[in-house]
Length: 330
Image (cartoon, rainbow, N blue to C red; front, side):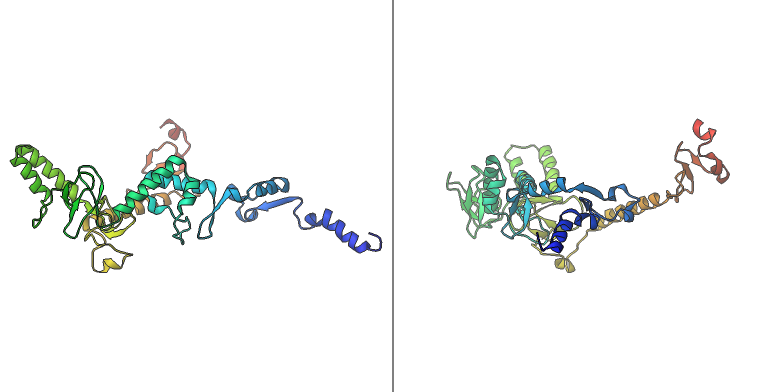
């Protein structure tokens, strides 16, 4: 560059010396400062050459990512894993954007791309079933399991076998009569000679035990059991929140200002778990970072040797026990 010596010097400096002047030396430093986390090897920064980083960055093209209707971008492999898991488990209501602040559903054309043919057919079948289950006026025929529409009086007629039945109890249509309770059904079977008195008593005990911790979802009417925890429940079939105590559909915790959130036995279990957690924290705190030879128990006031696991009750023995011949011979 004749007549442009200064420009030439700048170009050469940018080409050959700029990275060294910035203390990069041809490498990119990733992660936090080394000196700040010098005590933890997992936090030590790593140095990668530009020749390794740039090709890796360029290899991620648009085909490696998927954009949802909410404009959020995600890795295709991660989305495939997420969708396959929920389709396998039947939790279709969780097929939404992974962002915790977003609840946009994943459209079917993206699911078709992410799932295999068999998985997409399963999703299509489950989506139809769950859509029918969410309709309050759709019930299934107890004989041929075909979807039927029931009227205001819970009367439904199967379009396939023409069986007319009660949409609530699935028994033969009984206009003007209350549905039979499980106890009444068992007594009727005993009266017809199909069950003995002992079988009825045993079956009745099983029914009572079953219905003790089971409620029906107010939206899709699927049976849900509660093992432990509070009375705020979420249906695994349709995602509806409801109160386990009264069975009403709810949103949030405002409902429990007038209804009980925890049952007395649940509170007892919660207190026990909190006590166990607190006791466990105390036991962890008893092992001092600067003295790993003995563990002192705050409950029985005894010290245990970490090498031989022997309980040392005498403080005078503690000073010279660890690593001694007595410790090795124990």
